[in-house]
Image (cartoon, rainbow, N blue to C red; front, top):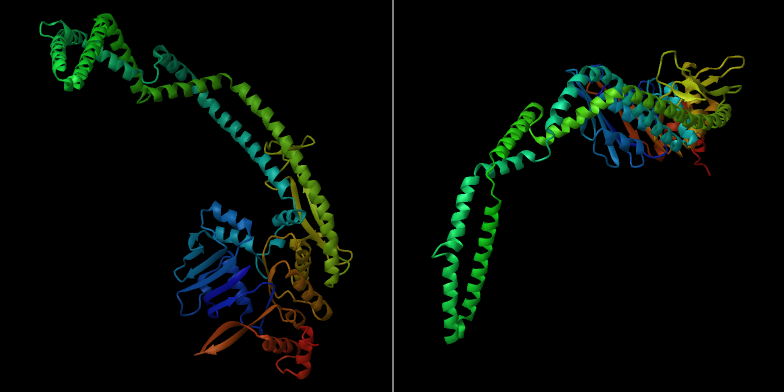
Length: 569
């Protein structure tokens, strides 16, 4: 719902801030007071285009801002998430027009495009007036109204999932075809590179291992010399470390016999001898494995050179080289099995088109059943609103694809056009006079008839329509008396499911308001200014009475107003 509307320096409005309520919000005022300006500003907020000519004289920019309660609007949540805009229970939309020609749009203080403002507006408000923002007059929206009434969200979700799978297969097939010529051109090169790499067949970290092994082989003579020296120092020399520690141990044994406190030191000498013995064994074993092999050395140097050459040519590391070999191997395999892979994908594509067709047909069946109910109820609603002998029909058609068009889904082997809604083209048709043919709703006459058609449709779709706010600009055009009363009752009933803001000249409608606002025009310092204020109960009675009798308000008109408002006991 719309919680508040703020307008600054727009046409005759200097500054205006109005807070709306749930239920039926009625706006009245004399002709020229600025009611239409209010609706124009609302249209601007919802994404309609405007020039800087609407900026109030003397101002540098116009601002229109609306605060909406979106706590239960899942579609808005999804839209904001998709566009990475912070969401909370209140959504703030703002449009700014400047004399410099700039047009700035914001959602929750985040700069956004005009298209996104319009998209958000389409999920928040349906504005019925002399504006383009009339979703029921846009045939492309009729399928959404029908689906909301049908409550077929699960079917739609299932269908969209299958369409996504279809698009994935189409994309894979398209990419495969695009790669065919490239693969054919590069197959010979890739095959040569594969042979070149496979001739060496390096493994992960082999270059590092070769470097370590080379370092050892290249220093084999030095290793032999050093290990021999270490072994001799530890064990073979006349004054070897092993002999020296053994002598120390023998003398400490003699000390222990005199003073037991040397026992701990004796244990340490045993540990030292054991450690020296381990070192001796390790050095001896290492020395026995040292090889001085010039042929092996040359072989390893050659392999390392070959690996480094491959790395330089195909990648900076062996892992990159191996990954490249894997990729071009797959490319060559694909080139060799292209026809087979293409045929396989085409079979998958045909099967998926049939699955999509079956899922779409379930949607069609549901829509056909709902269309019959909607037609019957709209005709009944229009009769109660004074439009008799009306015919209303929900047209549901499917279209075959043109020859050569491969973008289709299959239903009973018939190729059909499709979109995210299915295969159905849905449009509302109406005839309001006997003998007239049914015509698209978008082409019916303007004025009160259109407003009542809109109201009848909205009343029928009310329980399932997700739009929280409906705005009716002078829905009473062309109606009066008993019909006006019925229009008011219909609006009141509709307000149980939606927030309604309606501009009216008729007391029969104004008298049923939950909240009543009056638009007034005043002269301030040689300037005309429009303003709006909420009326209390006494002011509401007088405003309804004025709509009944004109400027001269009588006791009779006051009593009549109270009666319309249900205040007489």
